[in-house]
Image (cartoon, rainbow, N blue to C red; front, side, top):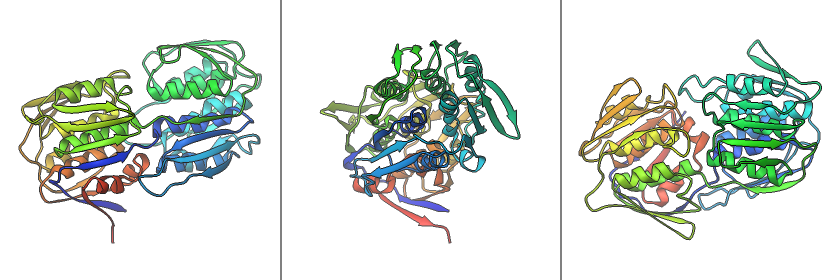
Length: 429
């Protein structure tokens, strides 16, 4: 199993390009199942989750044609055309679905287009239960019959789906994506209330519209979908990855460096940007680039509560905690999205961080310096938080079990090395 060895204490300097958004790419890839016409996606990142989803779609009979498979941090992303004109299967098997939670998104499109889907209950990072009941209830509202049998969701709608009013009791990104895709081919009008409005959902909705879907209210909590019979060929460019953008902002700031991020946007991270600036990070956006540096006084503590977009993203909570570990004064982080997303805390404490936990609240007292240690990653964002901490720690830190990191970050070592970091990937003997 691979691990990263990092020698910290080097201020990062230079310029890198932000990849296409993993969390936008996965539902966009799945959207190809809705049509017998080709869908071409540009700027797909080269990460394990994309490969896993491509394998799942191929198992269902989707033909993939790839271009532009770059091999460095300067690559402009993959271009893949998805041809789902002939589906050979309507079953998403356990061996593929267990690797990635987003696999549940094939449920809505398969059901809407073919009237049947058999999808294994998903796996993914160990950051909480994240049940799929809201996905299933949305499908039932649209007229599907749902059964759970031997770990599989079996959904049937032999007469097709029909429009419905669906009000989500809590904001759910995946549930919104699944219901939105299913509603595109449902007969009549569907209204999704309390819908998630993350930039990735806006990107999905815009792609569906380019395919011929009729969607109103894009970017709001109320989506109104008028079902259509067929969709058209389309080409769509994936938005920049806002989580990768935020991660590298923190990388520049935590090391006291000065870096520039290409293909990046601040408008997709309003609450995060506000808190970084409160913490003493200087962010300047111009011509598609973001310049990152730190005020002369250094970093200072801030209080954060995660929330659905446009609130502070839970996917940047662990990285921000690493930053606050060396900020002056006290900070607090309330994790209000997932009940088990503080698993990185014991590892940061091993590196000298002063953190105490009380339920879903982490209290942090900044320290002058983090220290090198051997640490272990537990999930995707925890993995990169330990990398960030290692960049500022004295000595050599080893981050073990980094396979989670490869699921969501493209060319992470190459990008960090180009900014001056001393980082090396090793394989266990």
